[in-house]
Length: 515
Image 1: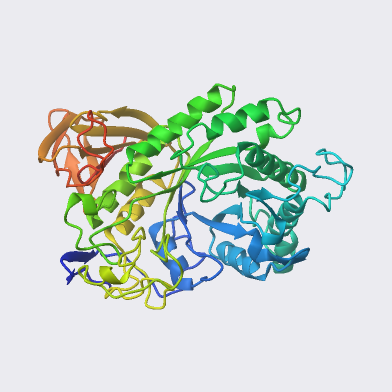
Image 2 (image 1 turned 45 degrees about the vertical axis):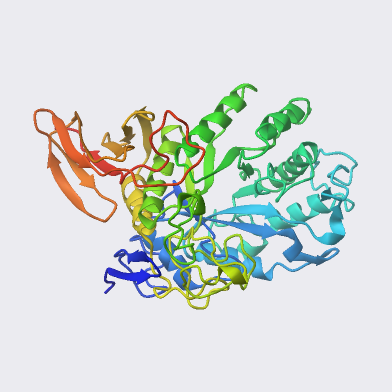
């Protein structure tokens, strides 16, 4: 039995919520896990860690998708010499656990690098000297990127090499291929917009030729430093004679949203509006969203001054963020939400970065805190930040994710309305396919307040992030309940019209249609 435990870590208090659990590996493949089509988690596993416990933790929470990078340079370590074994194991483990995979084609071997781009990227894709594939047309041996993509998809598509070797059933394999990660951020891609357009076009043509049912994801955009990146790539595609044959070279738009949950909905709308200028419409995925914690190891637990914890949340605010980010995105029509990430792992720090919990006294020695995005705290054998006294325990955000899966992950739903972004209370409504109505509300102010709104039925089930659930009858055709205030969150870029970036604890109400 898992018990709720509270203890001091430095000057912060780490609370371990109750999450139902099972022995590692038990119930894998059973119908007791939700496996939501609308929810994923990044790095449930990766080539260096395929532990059964990681999968168990993600399945308990209701995840349906895993997202991880397939690094070209880890596969082709010498020219024309490919080693797929690590990724064979990774994908096979996803499949055995019933998860769908959002695979990212990423990285480049040093011997194929051309400045900030890739050697021979603009050479024809096929051996016939064109970008048009004919029946059984061979890949141009002088185009290393096209060759790598071809081998990857041939191996990992449903019915591909790995599926045949493992006797996978129909449909088991990778059907969603993302082309690079955050190409609008120099840290990941500094080769320019034209080169990324060529990278995406080449991958799309190769993937669609090998597996016509595959979906191509435009590499998740952060919109941090180059807000015109998408527009400029679309301008390049607008003049390409092959754009209609290959669906403009992408089937899904992806965005990344951190720190401010409202941004998840805003970015969804931004890309929809941008695509509309070119008479395009695509599903939008927020396949990275999250906020790091300051008051729990490995975060800076001593950072009580606002300037020390810009864009860092408390444990409770991280849980609030997750719900708000998801419902903001869904309210604007986003399809799938991925929380970043399952464990803290190493975050943005080098492998091996480690130190014990402390109150800031180690900062004179160099790196003294790390990223704490994880739904779970790292294990004792983690490559980084492995000294939490409650290793491998869930943060409150884990319970928030589990609640999202329970409410939103079991049947289709659609947004109905969003009210009050700049008001004291945000009020978002969805409708399930069975006509049940889901209402999510929270307080944006620093004061507790009572909230009343009109009921659609005689009563509602009210869900709280701490796992509590009550039946609330409508009185006089309305519901009235208390909303907790927003906490202190240091977000220096908040617009003046908004009271807070992360509000108080969200409350979720589900109403069944009246008979």
